[in-house]
Length: 436
Image (tube, rainbow, N blue to C red; front, top):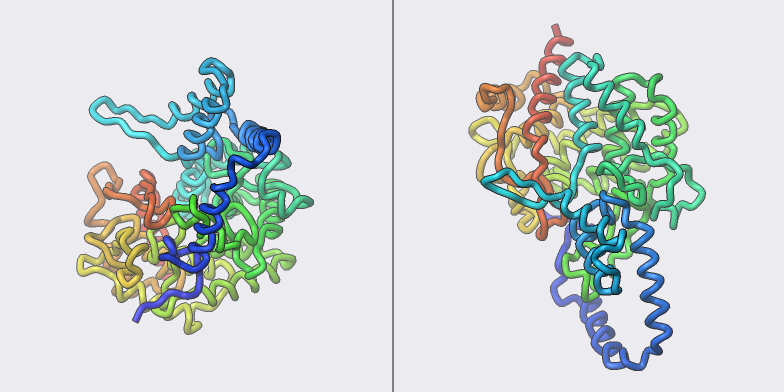
């Protein structure tokens, strides 16, 4: 039987909960008295909200550098009476336009862009493919990321950590108010693997910032620390049920792995408390929930790779449970595939309509991190990747690869079926070479 731990981050859409009913009652009651609020009070609140939005407009990268916030900001400025030619509205509109992709026969709007995340992962794949040697392309990518590190700019995470030195990276080209711990850990991993001396100062600042953002339970969230007031998901306009940014297993594992790779004794306590959190978050079947990638295969890969870098022995029972789960959900063609349906139906964890190259790569990287190299499951997975590689050397999987908000909004990372299979094949080749 598959059950979920008591983690409200995945329990979206509370069904007529008592808290939800209380909030609805309060909201409908307060609405009756809305006209009695003095005009000066309403104007003061509106001005405060206006100043908050304008401070975060983020130029042509947009509020939060993500489509929903950018559209709402543009509409808010119009409602507040800003003319169409006002610089704030012109810039906000330009930010939205930059998300549009027109390919002649088709057009679509991107929800956001992910250059930092993609560059870090591509660098890691290329480093593995070159046996750990950094090519010119990798150095160019890492140098660019060094130039966009968020340092001491104003940022919302400072509300809870006002005295912490900045040092993270955002997900997008520019989004200084919201650096992302997941991106930061991946960038540090790539920089340390490529040239720890060249990027020493960036690595130090990022590691210190990440350690300072650890939540009380030992885990790490994407943008904040201890953002766990789950009752807020029941307020009437939180209709997607994911208003918060609590610690998650995938981000926590990436951060723990980063600290493990750095090997600095001052982070030992951070690692121990994070590993303890990961043990508590493991599902009864051995998998881990993947908040930022689909889904339990992604979460399990993230944790197993992170644990390997912290020095956890793969012989431990909880790691072997994860290995057995990955072996159990391997498909008959040798690959792995999981649909986003598992966010709605967790009993379908690890299941999907077909295998995908990127999820096969995740499973393989996770298994190899747990010491499973020369095993039937890994060999079959490698054969699947070799058999599905195209003549141009790449792979091409359709469909969505990650949630924006589970059960609500899904994303497609166009690079996932390119650099993850390369990473897995190169990792397998290198591990086999070490065994000779």
